[in-house]
Amino acid sequence: MTIHIGAKNDEIADTVLLPGDPMRAKWAAENFLTSPRLVNPVRGMLGFTGTYKGNRVTIQGSGMGMPSLSIYANELIRDYDVKTLIRVGSCGGMQPNINIRDIILAQTTTYVTTPSSTIMKEVSFSPCADFNLLQRAYAFAKRKGFTTHVGNIYSSDTFYDERPDLNEQMVRHGVMAVEMEAAELYTLAARFKRKALAILTVSDHLQTGEALPSDERENTFAQMIHVALAAAFPAD
Ligand code: HPA
Image (cartoon, rainbow, N blue to C red):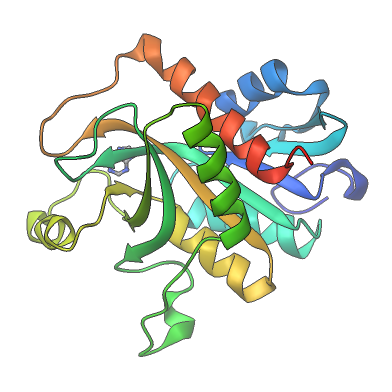
């Protein structure tokens, strides 16, 4: 039990999937896991533990933004000794070759600040994905025929952004998409020597204004869960 997670010590698996939305955690647990059990009701930030192909896995909501994700990731790592953390979420496309419904695997992330940035002082730290998770996620997604991009994303602190000039620089430097959590996840994974990956679907596009229709969100979310579980638990 921690301040924000009510699960007993043995109720959290070594591998945790982290959707931002707790109702997505419930949906994924009910649709992908065998014998899912609610292990965290605290603040409605639901977490479930079950098995996938015989492997224990927890699906825990992270909330929106790096401060919220940082609380859950810190407690999962420090108190429950979680080894592998995979974010499954949405992002806004930033390049002409990135389309809604595409899958983005964040190889690295750019950011202005993270909850960890003050400890870095003058250093610009480069958070990066675990290579094995990234490689397995990419291979699986390609095999399934999902349009998948690997590269740099922008982990922003603002959804309602007042700095179009920053986005311009991101676009200019090939950053694929914007979201709000991965940089802190990767930084914590580096600090505590854990494995992390962010798997994202493009839900809207900053340049075209296009957005994923709500009836398609479930389908694209299911694709990400498939990719995450395949990356976490390779078949052989
Ligand atoms: N900005 C930040 N996070 C997001 C966006 C966005 O446009 N779309 C989905 N997640």
